Length: 228
Ligand code: CA
Image 1 (cartoon, rainbow, N blue to C red):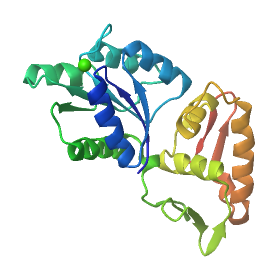
Image 2: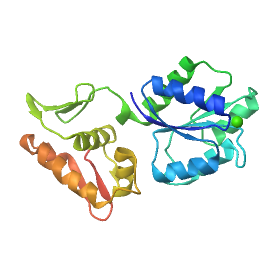
Image 3: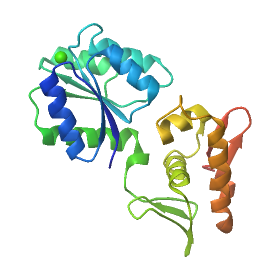
Image 4: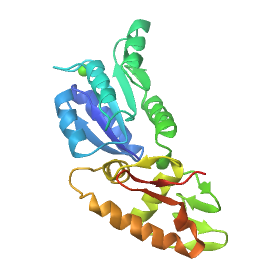
């Protein structure tokens, strides 16, 4: 499972330690030393998970977590809080602010990786390597293969990611901006029309087995995968 992780930590050694560990685990790491810098990073690219220090210069990690939860774009963004405090009441405050999990310094790299993995498995199933199947359509991320019965369907990497996202979130409609964020990690530098092009290609790739009918278009709202 490889993800884009934003590490928000003001202490350079800890930031380095966390970033290097996550990179070794196969993740892509973005870094910020304050909530303000993290804001700018998230505006440019929505990460898959945020590792957030509690004590930051300026806005605290807890206040920042609360703000992320209040914004529709980042409401579902997984947050793992880091802190030197070990008191129970602080854990409660962190979780109440919207953190998914909590890690007390000092922590082992192994523990950090395990917690990241658990948070992602829960909140971002499209990053998992587990095969998914919907109505006879089977997508295997590890083998990068899509099959319908004994027929293999040919998809480009973008259409593959888009289909993987839809298949792990059936029955929900996503706007073009949301799809750009979740599938491409970017809602700023890619035009929304690009999504329409990829949807068209995805439908075409699914046509041979008739699974193009699974892709749902809701006019004025967006796209999704039919669950019924
Ligand atoms: Ca700190």
